[in-house]
Image (cartoon, rainbow, N blue to C red; front, side, top):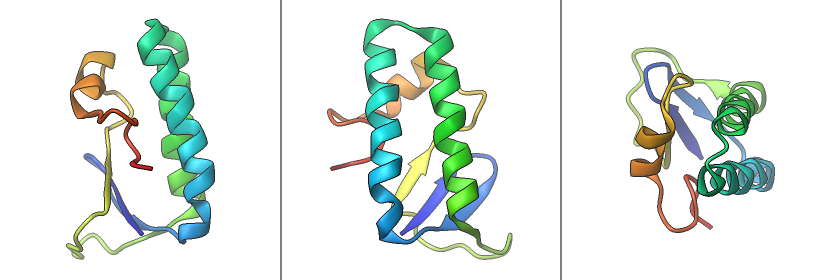
Length: 92
């Protein structure tokens, strides 16, 4: 799966990492729904760090279709809320 972090680039991740990312996404969604701004930013950074840690960065000149687009680390709660589907940032 190819994941894009807005403003940073793309990473190639094995599908086996999807469960870990989805767990963080569920936490992020719960914090957003509860209005926990500090928890939201902490979990968003953990989600993005997991993508960076588990994935392999694609070259800057590579423009592959992204299967998942995540917000930049400095994104506000409101900006991320606009990106959400009913199930969070990560479908499934």
